[in-house]
Image (tube, rainbow, N blue to C red; front, side, top):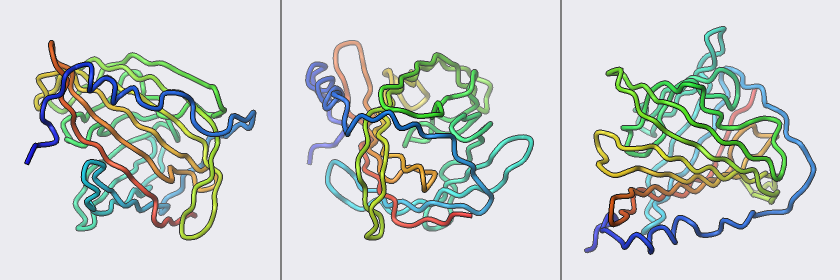
Length: 228
């Protein structure tokens, strides 16, 4: 069986990464303000491998503390294992956390990673250049480019919700597990009333001198949530 990381030609893989770059959804002037996260709020997601459709289990993101230090959001697998322990200065402004399914791209971001630049509105864009410092004090350069697209309707538990689409492209650079230049694209449907993403697509790839290697590709769907 061909492994999903089998090398592709550079042109073929870059074509995959460039798919559907035309803004999606219905463009509106509606602005989305920053949410307020409270202790005890949580969102449970089903993860599906986009290569073969296999179920990759559920994860739950929970707000575990809100202090002067920041907001702590912990992501756990179904067995309780922690897959991410993230800190936010405020909703959308991330101090530290994990940026790749491989788990190696973890650390503190300087300046803060602007996951969401509230208020959100169709057509809004922002770019960032920053460094990530890991637990060994190694520093890595990374970039982020984010675009807010249009609105769409999503369904959770049989109920319809309005969601605004956010597309984010990250250049994460080389890491201990990646000799090439690791890239990641995230396409999210953010539901303001739920203060969270309802569904998302994540796609990673490595760029080498003369070829591109595909990496993780996941689809994520919100299944349940608890709001304060």
